[in-house]
Image 1 (cartoon, helix red, strand yellow):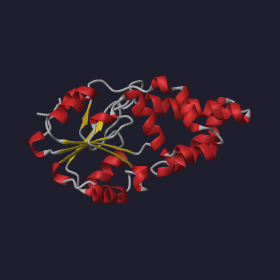
Image 2 (image 1 turned 30 degrees about the horizontal axis):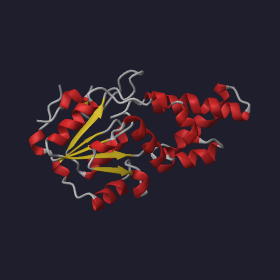
Image 3 (image 1 turned 180 degrees about the vertical axis):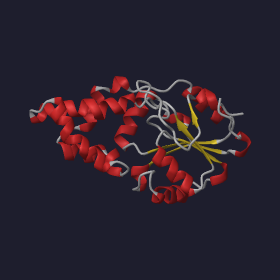
Image 4 (image 1 turned 45 degrees about the horizontal axis):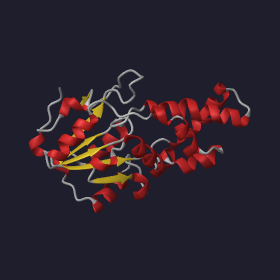
Length: 219
């Protein structure tokens, strides 16, 4: 059980992929399904397709391009939005998420979804999970023109959502995002031990982390 000073927190910011949703969908999609379809298109084996596109993925990490469906559709010559729908049965909400969202709303705290996901991916996942209605506001980094890993994102975010750094909780599975939030001065930060339920637990480095949202139910 992770102890949080809930009496100090009035805003809760939650990441989507790997935090609320099982990252297995995204990992499988980008690491297996996209290379498979790319290989079929180009007449390549799965191994050769991975060898060709994995470095391109790596080069885009931490930028908006990495999260952009339209960018990868153009880069790879594939309809990424269509391909996501081929495996959308893998989209799954982590255990205890709904109970946590209901409890945060009932506590009167402001609840925001803060995601790097492209708007088309966000729409697909909200359609599949029906989570959108729990949030007071959904912040998509593509709308702000900067990824959460950058200081620019947090400046632009604060211009539209006047949150108090000292009274805000951010839960995110990305260490670069958590580090950016820490550098920005957000006081309460939590990582996720197992963003992908099909993979081993992460090394969460310098951050406190949770196994599930039942660890931090608000009081």
